[in-house]
Amino acid sequence: MRALVVFESMFGNTQKVAEAIADGLSITMTADIVEVGSAGTSLEGIDLLVAGGPTHAFGMSRVSTRESAAGQAAGGVVSKSTGLREWLSEVRADGAVVATFDTKAIKPRLPGSAAHAARRMLRRRGFRPVAAPASFYVTGTTGPLAEGEEDRARAWGEQLGLAVT
Ligand SMILES: Cc1cc2nc3c(=O)[nH]c(=O)nc-3n(C[C@H](O)[C@H](O)[C@H](O)COP(=O)(O)O)c2cc1C
Image (tube, rainbow, N blue to C red):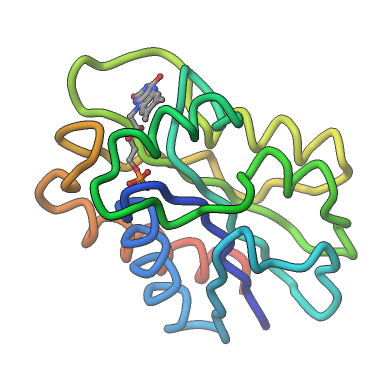
């Protein structure tokens, strides 16, 4: 089986989570990882899509929230060209099942999640979700990830791989 992990990230935290998830998935399947701006819109040959991004304003990022993030990123943002929302509106299911994840602030704990929003959008586009959306926590807007979150992401990826194989 073949998995593709597609991530959006401003300050690099969601990228780290995506890398850990791909690592966990690679125990049971071939797992590739790609930044959303470099991802194609065809998923031919992909059995499992794992898509994630940062939670911005209670959901997936928009141009305006990405601009706000860019203003806070000293060294520039990771995802410069587009966001998960835009990519999901164009990607074709091509038979792949899907799971979604996000990163969120640990404090204050706000409602809303990019992973839930992404899952809703993917459902509408004909994808079949195979796992509950997962959130991983950062200690501040720019990070770093809260302690243990990379390990939790790796374990989530491993479980996901076991569940679909
Ligand atoms: C414009 C903006 C809006 C945000 N809104 C939320 C929010 O509604 N809920 C939340 O938990 N975190 C929010 N955050 C914190 C982000 O989730 C955090 O920056 C992100 O998880 C970091 O991941 P990244 O380094 O991959 O971008 C927001 C951050 C920015 C820059």
